[in-house]
Amino acid sequence: MTPYLEEHSEQVGQAAERIRGHVRRTPVLNTDLDSDLYLKPECLQVTGSFKPRGAFNAVLSLTARIPRPSGVIAVSSGNHAQAVALAAATVGLPALILIPEDANPAKVAATRALGAEVIQEGITFANREQRLREVMAERGYTLVHPFDDWDVIHGQGTVVRELLDDEPDLQAVATPVGGGGLLAGSAISAKSHGRPVKVIGVEPVAADDAYRTWKTGSPTACAPRRSARVTSRSCSPIAWSTRSSP
Amino acid sequence: MFANRLVDEIVTVTEEEIATAVRVAWSRVHLALEPTGALPLAAYLAGKLPKGRTGLVLSGGNANFATVATLL
Image (cartoon, rainbow over all chains, first blue to last red; front, top):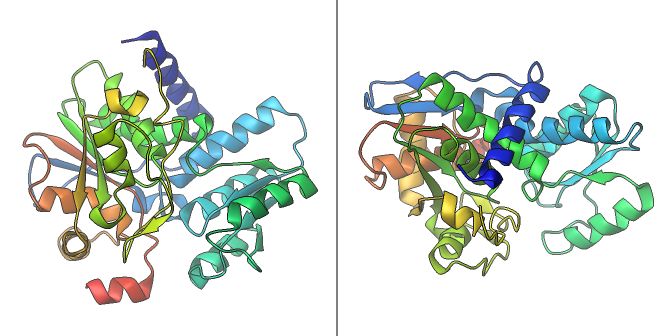
């Protein structure tokens, strides 16, 4: 294992300790579909997705670094919004979430129900990054990025770490790819497992920026794109960053 | 590249393959997955994953009811 991988693997281990008690250790299911298949159902995770793993790691790391942060902010129309809202509420920090106007109302309601302040007015897919900078400057809140943040990536790495703890003989793991945070964290955990484990990312063909980035070797065409049913925003510059010795 | 060295492969799945995976997840495995959460299952069902002992991370279940209704 390279020192680089070793360091990140250790940080995934620290994330696992940090978020324990705040997130569920989801089960690993073997079903009648195929006896070689092991499912890690993060739909059973708190808030209904794996996202609280990264959000709790980021928020708890922030409160360890800064004694009294003024609050956290996130831009999300989906699962990350609820995860950040829950993590912030748990530690008693205000959370402000910018959600595009055309987002699913159920997800907006769920985010508000977790105690976050939601701003939707005038927020679009195109202008949200700029609005984020403005609101951050006004409030002095700390950004919790959905994927381009090492604390978030280390938190997401706990999914595959648990999976391989429970099933150490797996030969491959496959994860969805959106921004790349889950895939990057999964890769850290799989490649530091001690036995060879293939890491496979799965992406909709209609939003295949990670596929093209992987194919060409450079993070190109990471503009917001949508498939009919899955929204894929952009690739994580951290996950795809150039490293001389990963 | 960090991800290029640590990630062995990226595979893509079609909208129809995603829809099939959501149906299989709901009906055979009784997991209420959102379409994104079903991506690895879609790749498996389409024969796009290598053979052998494989873990699938099914990432979430916050399905938009209207979308899922059209898939089921």
